Length: 235
Image 1 (spheres, helix red, strand yellow):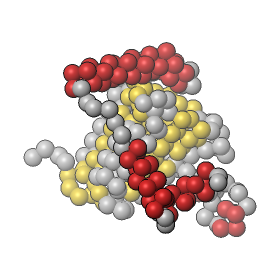
Image 2 (cartoon, rainbow, N blue to C red):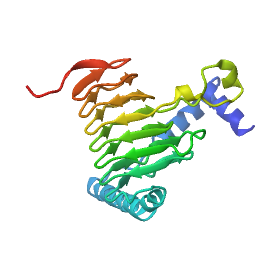
Image 3 (cartoon, rainbow, N blue to C red):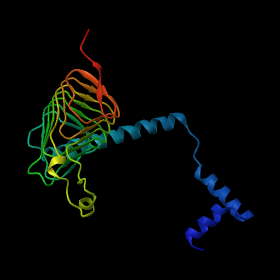
Image 4 (cartoon, rainbow, N blue to C red):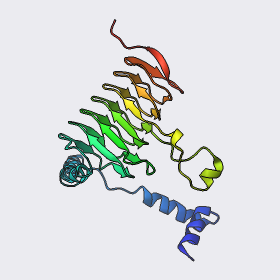
């Protein structure tokens, strides 16, 4: 009997023997040694310390210099965490001072554009699983915060015409555009910003919103499509 057939026979539980085997295998899956709290707490602390040391060493001696070699600017104080961002396409990248970037993020340059540019300012946070797709130019101002799973879609990657999509043709020039996030903007989790959009300074966009047109400075915006909810001006 093959391994696959044996597995199917055990899962079927159609005979007393297969039922016994199923119960035995199920019990084996949950077997564990008794917890000796002082011993295992110490081992747990050692495990965390070793893992942290490996992660920090990898960040310092591998991920950061490799990623920095891809940049057009020195990026002093750059902090990568959870690995190294994936960079796809002919993308120029500039990064300012003291910026923090999740390694679980993706930067894409449109291959049909000559030298698309991603320009990231000082003291910027780019959260995990965020994707920045640069059609021509995306500018992220100083002190901007991108929470996890944000999407800056400077180009869609596919044309609207279904026949062109089926033929594997690229998106068309009218589908691409610049994106500008002025200083102090905060995009909450899961925000999408489409091509051609400028978001004004200090504006906050609520989680899950889709920004399809320009937003003024100093407001809270939310929704699909995003609209201004209220001003954030003091008083």
